[in-house]
Amino acid sequence: MNDGYLKVLKNISSESPTPGGGAVAALSLAHSYSLTSMVANLTLKSQKWEDGHEIAKLLIDKCSKGITNSLQMAQDDCDAFDLVMSSYRLPKSNEVEISFRKKNIINSSLEATLTPLKIVKTSFKLLSLLPKLASNGNVNALTDLASASQLAFSSIYIGSLNVKINTPSISESDAVKYVAEVDSLEKKGYILNQEIQNIIKIRLGWK
Image (cartoon, rainbow, N blue to C red; front, top):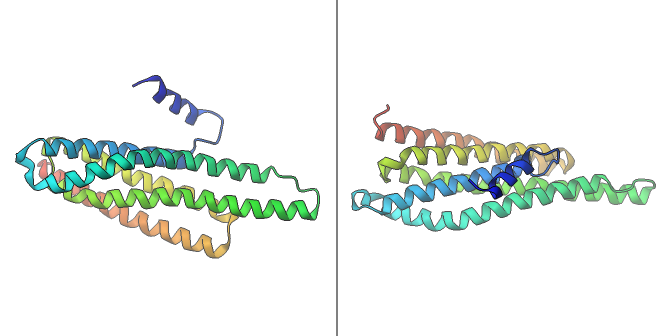
């Protein structure tokens, strides 16, 4: 591990609200992509795992882009929350300022809702591709894939929390829609993760 990694962890642990949960969800997703890519590469190295080569190739391509995208989403989440905080600090000494401040709070809170929602959706897309690699990938690296699956689900769960915490400041119709969406993805993600873990346990002879 290097100083850059430690700096990120220190930034998260500081008294500043950013980076916070949404950024951590994106970073968890980045780790999931990284572990998935490792398992896919190890699968491609041997003809013994030929049945897993197709999904491995697909995942290697997606993971390379996904790692970069995850880091950007972590930054986007920080930026979105900083805008919310800036909106709350706007002056409110007259009706014009109050109205302007209210609109800014709604708009920035919507952005702070949509950013973790994107993290949730992206995490679910990765998770949905993992059962095939779990079934056909290199058996010697399956515990790493189990970890990748758990990290992707954690990203869904953490991201959904950050969607919900911002919905009180947006319109009721949007709040209902986005909460329902993340609840659905969280439930589906839970089932998918359990399926992946079970496939891996069976292949390892642990079940």
